[in-house]
Amino acid sequence: MIEEIIKLSAVAITATILIDVLLQYNRTYAIIASVSICAAMLLYLLRIIEPLMQYLQELVALASSDDFGCIIKAVGIAILAQSAADICADSGQRALAGRVILAGRAAIVLVSLPLFKKLVLIVGALLGYS
Image (cartoon, rainbow, N blue to C red):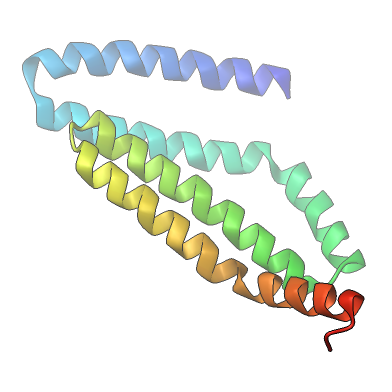
């Protein structure tokens, strides 16, 4: 696992240097290269975290799949929104990056509503309101 992170870091540093050089000549190509490299690194990361995904599947078998599914969706939304916002910010679109983060937060709240409902019901039952 450590070796994989070292490889990923080396690719990121090399890509940063190459994108900075490309940025001096053509900003559009630098942005396209940056987005492409980020996408490739995310795909590589998915391969690295495969053992984690297997462990999470075991946890789903133990817990309620609906509750755990909400958590997994929220984490996925957070990762995607942050990645998209970082790309927007690197491209000079800070306002757009902020809206992507806001949309991601709203989506996380929306996905988490079933958990909040269960929490309110549990607290209500403990306090004797049900």
